[in-house]
Length: 402
Ligand code: ADP
Image (tube, rainbow, N blue to C red; front, top):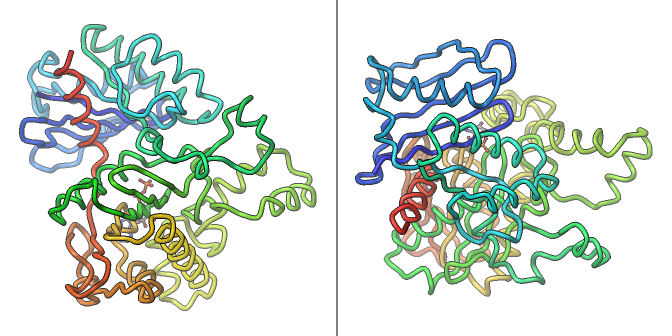
């Protein structure tokens, strides 16, 4: 069964066509600058050539048209007819407390995604545009499924998801921890159980998704008991441009001193902080690594802070879980930055973690495997995440049950 996986942002639209029979990625690409000048679609041809095509994309419907044309392109297309696409799976960032699993999109689901837009103003409206444009281009008969970043985290107990602010804000506005990257944490935690040859029900795992956005999750018996991101993806530890959690007074203090509006303050915390804010170099860890190697002390400090914050969260989740059988590193930095894994694991020696330093150095750019030594008290693993595959699998399961 061929499933089209869509990740629609406000000005971009990423897609993958996946054959779920053999889990092969048949086509992959992205539309950029939707609604702006210079819009284009980029995709790889079956023989690996990269194509960038300028196309007018005033809105998401035109972007979907461009995706359709790329999929059935006589020269580069992965399919000959659109009817080969059995269903479409959409990534949706915020599912609130409504969704603890993926669902078939219908009017009530659309209304709930819309209702949750205040909690994810940059994402949920864009996902809805994607869903509506998809209906227009593919027709209403093609089933669409929503897969939520928040769903896997819905098993968190109240004591983990509540904030100690007046209870009325939870009741009035749903102010609580939701968690994000759930699709990735679910994928790597299930894969870890497979690799360990154990049932997920009997495992205590800590999964570290370290990318441009980052989060760590504690998974007990296959269910999330805590995660670092919160009401929004700003919570937790420092990321590419996000601050992570702070003493809340830091925010009111800076806002008062600089006479900032909530929006201006939010921009500083979301776009100008993290690795970028401390290093002053870049939000991209490759640039921060290069600067550190050149002797840039602020780049060095940014890394020292990041390693320390990750290790502290792993330590606290070790206690929350009451022990730990496995730690997983994944996502852009987790999969490609051996130094980060080594420094974090140095902190974890007190928990009996022993890193195979030689293999860890080689484990980058697609090399995955067990990072710990056989006598390590906790198995440490590098697993490449694959959120699109989870979306395709969920979509297939829901469509087959119709
Ligand atoms: P996103 O959160 O946008 O999905 P990614 O998971 O792609 O982000 O992670 C992006 C981060 O991963 C960047 O900081 C980038 O520097 C880092 N990264 C990606 N590839 C490599 C690599 N080959 N070597 C070192 N760092 C990498």
